[in-house]
Length: 283
Image (cartoon, rainbow, N blue to C red; front, side):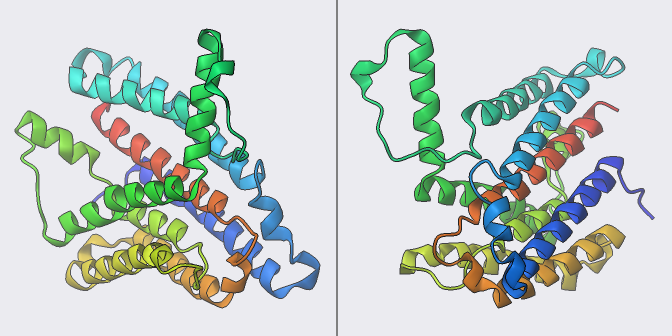
């Protein structure tokens, strides 16, 4: 039996805590009158989910620093890995700096009022944060995580595509390949959405979720030996989420912003993925 990686255990543990917390909050908000506003409180701007996202990005930043300067790994790390890890440092730091968990108002910033390098940096930060907080920015994030952590990885697992680890490029892509648990974590985050949308094009969220679930089901049917204890348990959590989100879908319709909860799961997936491949290459 293949040894379960430490990073996979840590990710599954954090995913369990975040998933159970989300299921409890959604369930109480939907079925307990005294807690009907609980999800709205934790999912609001600068709410608990936003704090968790920033926490995951902070942990990601410092864990990347640890792996980058791991004494036994530094002499044998290739340039491409050093560049990739440095890129992750900027990604984690940039996410914190941009404050993606904080939605900006609709007010515009006049370009003429921007003066000096610090003002320009503030202007860029505000503009990017406002775009990522917009509908199309959120959809772009959904598509990015879907293709990176669900669609492509599950297709690779289903077709048993193997990278040539004797080749430098093949070894590089093999190290970066997400695990099945990361795909399940992404699908859990994508399940947090209303069933009924205001416009037909907004159903792309449900379409992505449905396609991801189909691919996961195909993989489970054809390659059941890939699924260990953690994969099965996380799939049970995903099934519970799908059922509860369907029953509680009115909770997400209207004014409640559910996307902060999705971003918390995306942040956890990004943290788990980066820690997994960095730990592999620096052992």
